[in-house]
Length: 225
Ligand code: ADP
Image (cartoon, rainbow, N blue to C red; front, side, top):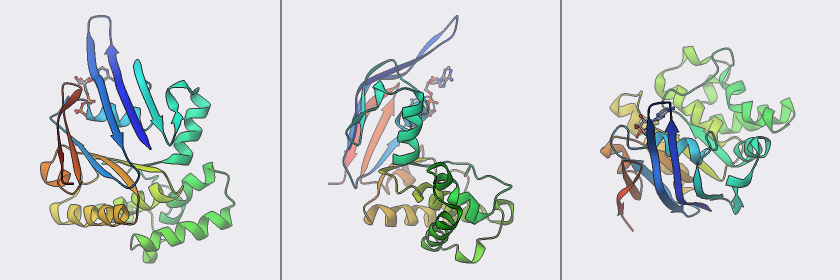
């Protein structure tokens, strides 16, 4: 389903070479909920960017849903991203000019869905995250927790194979963060595969497997199973 093998990535400037990922290997099965955690600078964001096909890597291999994505050109990578991956970000990344419904429907626009069909599907998704009463609101008219719910609904729109979440509760107070984690746990129980990056141990505990990174590789793994 998701398999990185000995992935290496370095950032280079004239003076400096930083090894952000060092022979990083991780296999995630369908339906798993995995947290990737570790101190600042350990490579969590780099991992997520590589996993989300937002950045390339230097060596190793990465297979997503049985496709060797390391061999794809830019267009093919965007296609895989649009079809197979849902993103949730710390800062929600909603488009302020668009309504809740339009934000949720945006990935469907890129998949070529008709306006009518995508609006209907977006309304269903808004209901699953408890936002049916807010379809015509704009992001600035919503609380942080509500904005993250919109982002989660948007991440679900393309029915992704995998959801990648980057510090999804990082901008929320504890109780709102707990509600967002409950929603992610619900989605996982319904079968969604989730990989979440967080530096907060209490948030990582929601995942059934926790990957601790240090200096670009896996330092240790905790598994509840
Ligand atoms: P984390 O998300 O765990 O804080 P990052 O993946 O952001 O870690 O960073 C891993 C290492 O790579 C750090 O040493 C960081 O300084 C370096 N790094 C990250 N992005 C860049 C970049 N665009 N250019 C140069 N170095 C980078």
